[in-house]
Image (cartoon, rainbow, N blue to C red):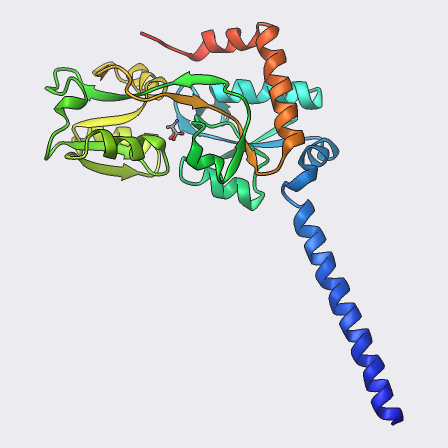
Length: 270
Ligand code: GLU
């Protein structure tokens, strides 16, 4: 009798401790990374961690001489840090690719993505977006003198290069169903593949392709743009406070003229 009472008490104590531990675990998860309090956490931490490209000239490119990442998305991110945390230095950059950016965000590795990322209905199922901060459109890059002049020339046997996880890879399958699509890890790899003759054309946003022309003028854009690619800043789902803060910051950057200054510095339209 006495024995079973103690074991009952023991069991209750054990269950209570287990429940407490489980609750603690849950609590940790809800507050780590993002969740409801993402903006508070960023402010408490005194730093926002932003996922950017390291291989995309004009938007986010690591300068091998200085080790710094440079580009439109980088300058916009610094301004966001200035608006939200009062100092453009209160930002830490982490490298993302088109394929890794959503998993990294949802893992809690980064607070936001500022990485040539199109706002799309499909992606809205996985992340929340800020207002549009840049308008691009998908196009084609070919070597000068190529017989490919536009989408209509992407026939059976034509090899088109794209990057994994990009809208470009999805769109091109629909726009050129006959062509063979080869997918690469990032834009540096895709452009290297085009230059080494592994494909006939490379497809992504015009804004990114201009960066490749800038690097090698033997290449050119053809066929105009055939999709709309509005860029947004992505955050973990349910982060209304952070989205509001980012939108407020974007509005301020636009109104102050800073946005145009950054755009004129990086964006080529020729
Ligand atoms: N804007 C397109 C996208 O979000 C292409 C650029 C990229 O791969 O980041 O997928």
